[in-house]
Length: 90
Image (cartoon, rainbow, N blue to C red):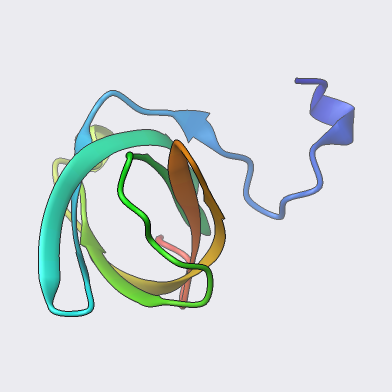
């Protein structure tokens, strides 16, 4: 990806961890494809629909913490989905 073509306010970075997330009262764990201060992409075969509200927990190793964030699914594909957080992670 060309850095100059990046249009996100918070550039995403690859991650090697799982996220625990809840959608429609169901909780799952799946690998994080990439993450930024403003959103996350989850690699999964699950059919998570665009527009759904979601609650997530995942590790941020550099800060030795697991934030709990809420957001909205903004894109859903066969191999995963993207979420924009309600509030960026510090």
